[in-house]
Picture (cartoon, helix red, strand yellow):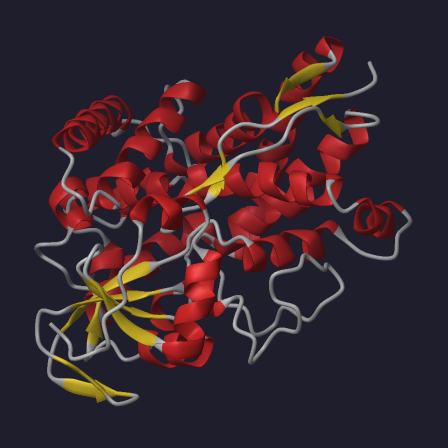
Length: 384
C-alpha cells in the first residue's frame, strides 16, 4: 500500500453525500489512503488530470479488478496499443458524425414516443418513467441489442455497476451481476448473426474482433451508457427546476441546455471515480505508490476543485466548465461522450421541457452514490 496519509470514512455517509469529505481531503490530504475502500484516493483536479495520462504508472490493466472479473477484459481495462486498437474498431459506431446523422434521429423518435405516452398522465417518476427508458432505448440502438426491454437494459446496467463498485464484497451483489452478464450474453447470441447496421455489435463483428472482447466491450458500453445518461437526464432536470432563474435563462434563449448538462456533470458527477492499478514504484506529490497498489482517480472531487472553480458547490450554468473532467482525460476519455451529449443536451432535456408544460417536482429528490451518483426517484407533475 502507498505511504499516503490515512483518512477513515463512514461509508454510509460517504455514499449519501461524498462532497464534504472530498473537500476536506482536497484541503488536508489531497492524496490519501482510505482503509474502507482499500485504495489511495487522488482528489485534486490537476493531479487527476496529470496522472490519468500516465498509463505506465496508473494502469487501467487490472486482471484482478472487479470489472475484469465480472464483465471480462474490455477496452477500458487495456492500455496503449491494445486499447487504441479496440477504440478505433468501435469509433464508426460512436463518432460525432455517426451520432448526428444516424443515432440522433433514433434518439428523438424514441423520446417523443415515450413523452406521447406520458403526457396524458400528468405525473410520473421522472427517473423511472422518462430518463430510464430514454437512455435505454438509445443504448439498445447503439449496442445492437434491440430485443431487450428498456427495464431489462436498465436492470443489467445497474447490476453491473453495483458489481463493479462492490468493494465490500457482498455476495448477493456479485450474484446479481453474474446473472446480468449472462443475460447480456444471451442477447448477443440472438443478435450476432444479423446485428443492426452501425451498432457496436455490428462494427466489432465486421472487424473480426475476438468473441470474448466483443462481449466484454458490449457490457462496458451498457455499464457506462445506461445509468449515467439516465441519472444525468433526471439530475439536470432536477437542477434546473430547483434553480428556476437558470432555467429561465435557457427558456429565454440566453443559455443552452448543453450548458446545463456540462455544469450538472461537473457539479454532481454521474461517474465520480475511475480505478487504477499501480504498475511500478512512483512518487507523486510526496506520496510513494508501490506496484499493485489501488488508486482511485476521483473525478467527482476534481470537478469541484476550488483551485479551478469559484463556489464549486453551487450550480451555475453560466460558469466556464472547461477545466472539468467529467468524461475523463487522456487516452481513456469517454468514447461515448458525443452520444451522451446528443442524447441528453439535444434530445432528452429540450423535449422534456417542451412537452411537459409547467413541470414541477412534488417531493424532495434523494441522491445516492460516490463512484456513480444520481437521483433514485423523482416524482413530478405537469399540466396536461
